[in-house]
Length: 396
Ligand code: RM4
Ligand code: MN
Ligand code: MN
Image 1 (cartoon, rainbow, N blue to C red):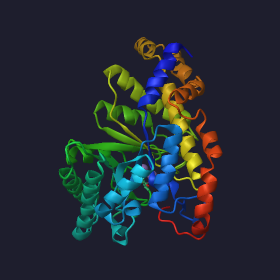
Image 2: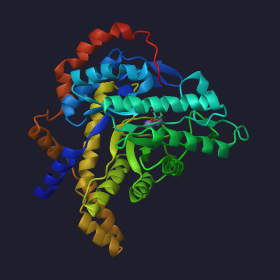
Image 3: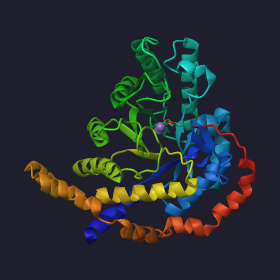
Image 4: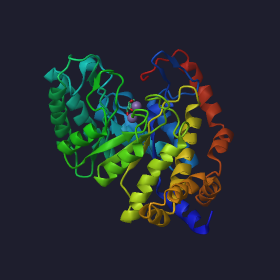
C-alpha cells in the first residue's frame, strides 16, 4: 500500500458513518421460531446502551435508527425520554422508521389498503413519525411498506399506486426543509403475488411524485438473485435519487445476514460506484449508510462490530481504486487491465491501515478483542438473562 493510498483510506474512514438499528440488539428469530439470547436487549434503554458500546469501540456509529412502534410506542410523547437515553449512552437518534405492517388493521395493506380509514390511519402514523423526527432533530423518515397481495385478481394494482402516491405526498408535505423521506422497496415477503413497492423503479417514481425531499432507500437484501445492485446504485446516483442504504447480506431472499458475509465483492462494487461518482464530482454523495440486520444465532453486539469493521474494510478498498487509471482503461476498452485495476484494490489488505486509523483516533485497534475484554457482555448477560428466558419478541 502506498502512502497516498493510506491517506485516502484515512480520510475515507473519517467520513464513513454507519447507523445501527435499535432492533438489531433485541431478540429476533425466523418465521418458525424465536431464538432467545441471554444478553439480548430487553428495553429501548438496553438497545441504546448496546449501540453506544459499538460506537465507543468503533468510533463510526454515532446514530441509532429507531422503529417507532418498538422504541416509541407512545409516539412523540416519548421524545425527551429517547433524547435522554441517547445522551446517556453517547449516541444520537437516527432515522425514524414508521411501522405500518404489524397491526391487525394492515392485513390487507396500509397506505394501499382499499379501506380509506385504514389508509388514513397509516398516513397519520407516518405523519406522527415526521413529528417524532422533528422533536428528536432527526433528518430521515424511512418507511418500508409491506403492502401487497397473495393471489392474482384480488387487488387492483393501479388503484393502489394512486393511494400510495396520495399518502406519500401527504407525508412529504409535513417534512421540514432539511428532512427527507426515504422510500424503501422489496420484491416479495410478506406478500407473494404482488408487492406495491417492489423495486427501485417503483420507489423512484413514487418518491418523484411525493416531492423533492423524497429519495430511494436501497436495502441490499431486497433484490432478486441475479440483479445488478451496483447498476441500480449508478442509476440512482445519476438521478440524485439515492437517500440511503440498509446494509445486510443475503444468499436467498431477505436473509438479513451480516454485511459481506456471503458476497463481499458485491458490497465493494457498490462502494466503488459511489467513490467513482464522488471522484468525478469532487464532492461527497449525501447517503445515509444504515445497517438492517437480524442476528439470531450470532451474538448481537459482536455481529454489529463485525459488520462495522467489514463496512470499513470494503469502503477503504473501494476508496483506493485508481480512478484516473481506470477511466483511461475504460476509454480505451482495455478490458482485462480495467478489470484487474478494480480487482487490485479489492485484493489489497486494508486492515493494517484501518488499525492505524483507529490508533490515531484513540480507538482500540481491534474492536472485537476490546469488546471481549471489556466485560460488558458478561455484565449484561447477568443483568438480562433471567428476563430473557421465555421473552416474547416483536419482530421476525
Ligand atoms: C423489512 C425491511 C425494513 C425493516 C423491517 C423490519 O424487511 O427491511 O427496512 O424495518 O424489515
Ligand atoms: Mn430494510
Ligand atoms: Mn428487509
